[in-house]
Length: 544
Image 1 (tube, rainbow, N blue to C red):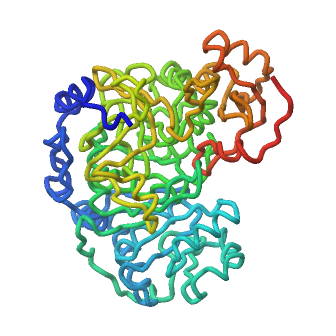
Image 2: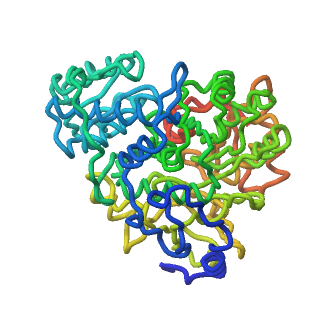
Image 3: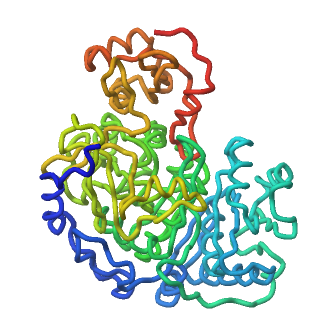
């Protein structure tokens, strides 16, 4: 094994230049938002540290009437949200919940997911928001794996309680969220006027259990601490140049990383907007109604949204954050030329607590790059292949927002968290200016004719064709070749032969895949393509 590469020129230059890359964060609240002075090393999560309930309570005390949470037919202020969270927390404890109890959430709406996270934090219980759209086998395995003490569900997920009753807690530990407004009680105990002050937490106390996407296998739980939420929020605020007046719209699924937009908005005193549809018209309406300035979504959602990119209701937007998968350059350029705002590619992972690489606010991005290391993180590149250059390897990370373990998975923890570093499994190159370029996953790297191929390169080549909307490349079973699944843009048609010719003009011969055309590719609820389903279960008509 080649081991850890010596700090290459990209690492050294990055470390020296971080102070110049990111402007100092403003003193909006000295107690809540410290300046990130030590750019090379980790941000100290204990410096001016505040838990999520403390941040909400502070905002409620200083700007009680400022809007915090908006949805289709309502808006709630910071003071109302703090009161609501305390009331629900009192109701939870009145039912018999105890601090550190594990609460499985099967809620369907983004608004309810936010309310549940805040109420659970206030009660000092640990929420575990799960993907209720997993296959029956996978969801059953997930419930067995986390073994929850309580369940929060709603009408849309009530049938799951019946289906999985055998492995769930007893029914007296089920909480049903009604379909009504935000003030409607979730438990009978909420009808009392008992409330709770914002509790005290240590930075290492677990706020909730976040889950990896499961796009490459069974979702793994990641304990998300209050300290990590605070530090990743400060890092993202500075990296992306977020401001107190920003209004945030996250188009991730309700269960996916709810802390990211909640904490960013709360730390700055901004507003979080919730929608539960990916229809472009619904999103445009929400943007116009609430003056949304920042959107967070995966590239496939932006591709869908690009059909309405000329809609004047998008006029308030200034930041379009694209993560969770590689953002195609043609899509970035489409937004730049038609909306006047390019997509901002970022790279992050559940284990890091959010984004760890992003294009610095106000600076030009190098084409093909996902940006530079965000404040508070340190990195190294490592490779098992001695033929790799010093500028390429698996990305290793450390920093205050990094998880330290997987939830109840000691073997997986030992593989991913070693010697103080998180091994991401993602391969990057890094140039002399500190810009990172994603190459692919170590577990997706394919050997074709004994040569190393990363599917991402072929996928990006296919996505460069104007008629292609989605592409995923996997190894062809039992053969030393590549197989590409492709979906055309709406209203477009193309043949596999034309796409292969397009690839031959741009790729080495051994990288040109066999192509299968499909109406659409399988995805997670957040829009990430499920390659596992393509590799194992879809019919493969004989195409080019």
